[in-house]
Each structure stands twice: as structure tokens, then as C-alpha cells.
Length: 165
Image: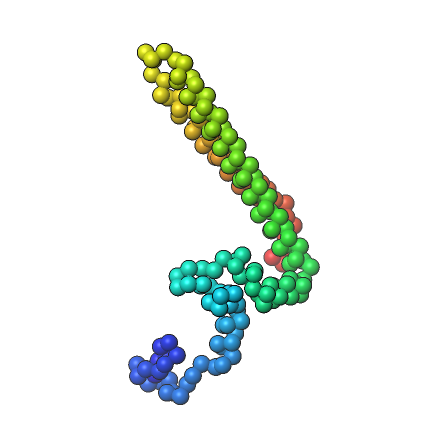
């Protein structure tokens, strides 16, 4: 008998018909994925839609288990977790600065391009001037991406590796 969705079928005669999953297996799976505040499973709030971590953090049971796990974490792992979080926040800050700089360059560049296009004589082709702000914004985004990637790589190589790893 082969179990399909918890029911036995006649496909495999080697498995006894009375075999059922152990009660501990279902409990372990249920504990591994805590329920969301709405009562849906942790992996899905609605069929096909994952639950946000922010929604799960509103659940007091989930928060209590998370805080308990963090309290019981070894100091080395806690320091590694803090370093990873700081690195992620640093990278996000660099990316945010890049987005803001690109937006400012794009806005100011388009205003200046529009002014230059308006005051130019109509005999010369000046539409190319609108490409400059977009090219500068793209260049800024590319440079910020390289900066974030290089910063991550530099910090990764500077991090001391634990012995035996």
C-alpha cells in the first residue's frame, strides 16, 4: 500500500494497510512552520501567497518562540547574526543613497535638458540632450551596485573564519 495524502492505496503490497504516520511527525511539521495570526499556515496565508514576516511578527506566539531562540543562541552565532544584519542594513543604505542620487540627477537633468532644448535654435537636432540625464542616472546606479557588491566582498574577506570551517 502506498500512502497518498494520508490514505493507503493498493499500489504497493509491501506496506501494511494499517501503517499510519506517527503523531510526532505531524506535530514536528506543525511546530516547524508556525501559524500566522489569521490561522493560515506560516508558508501560505492564502493558497499560493506567502505570509510576510511582518505579519508573522504580529503573532505573539511566533514572537515568543523567536525571542526564546535568540536568547538560547550561542554568543558566536549571535555575533554572526548581528554582523549579517548590519551588513544587510549597510548595503540597503548604500542602495537607497544611490536611488535618491539617481532620481535627483534625473530630475535636475531633465529640467536642464528641457531648458536647453527650449532655448536652442530650431535648426539643430537637440533631442539627444534628453538621453544625458538617463545615461547619468544609469551610470550612478551601476556605480552604486558595484560599490555595494565590492563592500560586501571586502567585508566578507575581512570576517574571521571560525576554526574548522
